[in-house]
Length: 158
Image 1 (cartoon, helix red, strand yellow):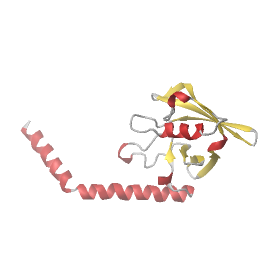
Image 2: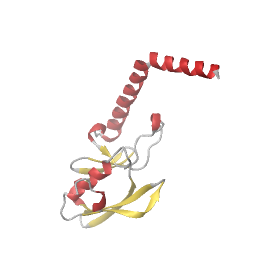
Image 3: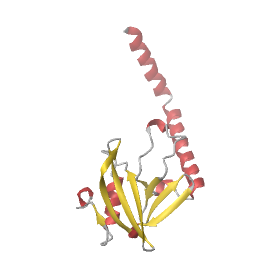
Image 4: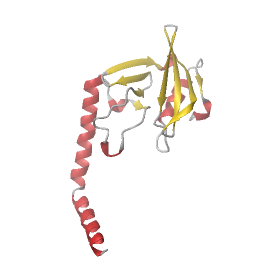
């Protein structure tokens, strides 16, 4: 028992002495992710809001890319399939509704986009959780279009 307490104390001391190095590592990693994203997509990562599931704990997503990833900003919904970017104006989104399905306890949503008289349908699993409200912000943005149908139970500004 005493050895366990001493070992824990030593680990805590080592971590405290290396706080700056650990912080620098995560800052460099974040900057490299932004550079890689910009090279792949020609978009600024930190100006977009992510809709699909977020970065996994301790950066274990280093070699994992979910296909496609969904992002949005004030004007567009972006689908990023590694280096291919598809943009849809948010004003063209005519429906965002919950489906009756879920994956890993996360609701699957249907997004219907009307472009050139064709309807494009996407189904996504969101990163909506207790700590993020990105999808609610997206729903609010889509709801600004009076011709859209949005599952209003999930709107932030109801």
